[in-house]
Amino acid sequence: MAVINAIMGTLTAYVLVRYEFPGKSLLNAIVDLPLAIPTLVTGVMLVVLYGPQSFIGGWLKDQTDWRIIFAPPGIILALLFVNFPFVVRAVQPVLQSLDLESEEAAATLGAGSATIFWRVTLPALWLPIASGALLSFARAIGEFGAIVIVAGNIPLRSQTAAVYVFGEVESANRQGASAMSIVMLSLAFAMVLLVDWLRKRGRKDAEE
Amino acid sequence: MTTIAQPTTEVNALTPRPESIRSVSVWRRRLLIGVVVAYAALLILAPLTALVSGAFAKGIGASFTALRDPAVFSAFRLTLFIALITVVIHALLGTTLAWVLVRYRFRGKWLLNGVIDLPFAVSPVVVGYMLLLLFGRTGVLAPVLEALNMKVAFAVPGMVLATLFVTLPFMAREVMPVLESFGVEQEHAAAILGASGWQTFWMVTFPALRWGFIYGVILTFARALGEFGAVLVVGGGIQGRTETLTLFIYRALDERQYVGAYSAALVLGLLSLVLVVGTELLRKREK
Image 1 (cartoon, rainbow over the protein chains, first blue to last red):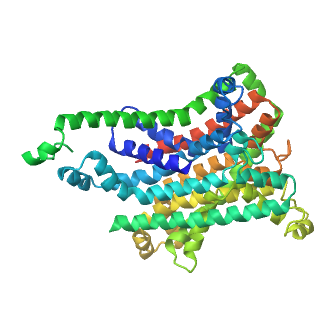
Image 2: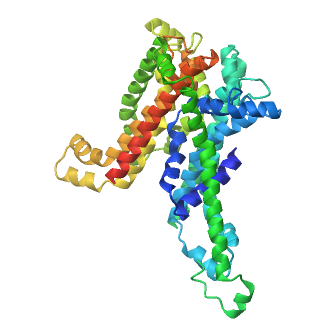
Image 3: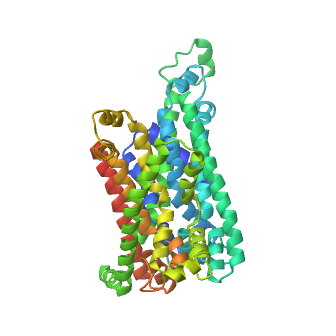
């Protein structure tokens, strides 16, 4: 999920910053939608669209063994939805402040646009991409509302860490809930500090 | 980019002609825009449309009847109540927190800075569970609560605490950058001119912070409306007593009352959407 999000998020930021096209401000607004919509509602939306009663879900069930809801693809879709803004909003301002000069210099020296992207533009963006992807990864680990709706609660098949903790709390199993909670809490804390550090480094790079 | 390059004849033999570069870049441009727009439409817009059609699948009348259910009404009231308390507390506390973090230097500041962001990353279920460990029937603070005859877990106070925890970062993160860019010169000038601390804050600092403050309040409110995991674990979702709108949706889905669940989800989603998008528009106009 974090990998897809990093790639598509960077691409979205690139398109939003570098190109002009009709509907651009609409796309810009859509990026922020997942921040406004409660994650539980996101889960409900995905069930309506892909669930067994829906057109797509029903068709998939008839034609193939594939399932989206109550299975990992649904979880991935939910996480992609919920975390869409994070990489985009991390990369966008940095890309905006990036001078076109070095890219133009590379073009003058005869570099093709693929070379320019990989060797000039991307290296300048890796810090925000990393911090955005890491933040979305951290949130993905803890996400509950969207997943519990989309995934159901099937042990060993569609149970994520947060759903597991919920199950243990419900069945009054303190040990299991506490152990997993401590792991998740330390992971979250470590990642938050790392994201903070990456951002600070990015700011320092920008000042130099 | 191609117009800048003035290739010598030597280089010209190696690089493609400018026209072909241009046509390639036009197609790449179209391809990239197409990919991104398709991705956003499939990922975000398709589910949104599906929810709207799902809520009205049995007609608008059925949706309204489902929403007139007293359970929905009491859930909505509780949601608003919790969100309002959260906003009031965080408007004061979050602004103070931002102030302290921007204006003062002290030991452990980096840690406090990290702790503020923690609710962004930690699972709401874990938040709820931690509160249960503190305030639950066998919790650490259980004797104190019993002596005071107070109920926190499986009651509204616990749910307010959970919501406060989850919404902690929004206020501070909106106000901090404004406070940073504002600087202290104007405050110093006001102080030199004889303004008291309060006067300086209300007449100089706060007007500058206004938009960060309003945006923080709206985000906090929207997030509080939509909180689910933490409130579910600590509140238990007892119908009519600790059931917020999100918990109602969860129960309705479980009981296969699809129209009610979808309609309530639509109302909740639209409400948050209008709040956040509306503020964004207001802020843009102000600029």
